[in-house]
Length: 98
Image (cartoon, rainbow, N blue to C red; front, top):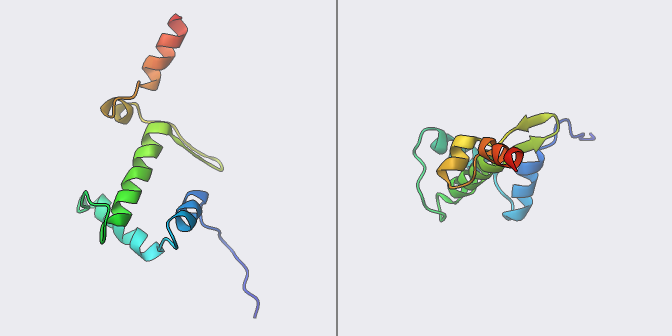
């Protein structure tokens, strides 16, 4: 029997998988469920290492935006303001003023 890949992992997950020494899908799902339920802990060690990795990934996507195939999620200005980044609306107003 020959196996054929029907669906590939998204690029961001593949990058995590290879950069984090065999990033496990089952632990990823559990970490994301804890984050959704606000049960994650602020630790980057076991058993909450995956929580920390996903929190940072979510933060980056909210601050810088996320582009994957045909999906475009723009940066979130409220999150950018919270973390001390210029909001993109303010930045564009500054550029248009100059």
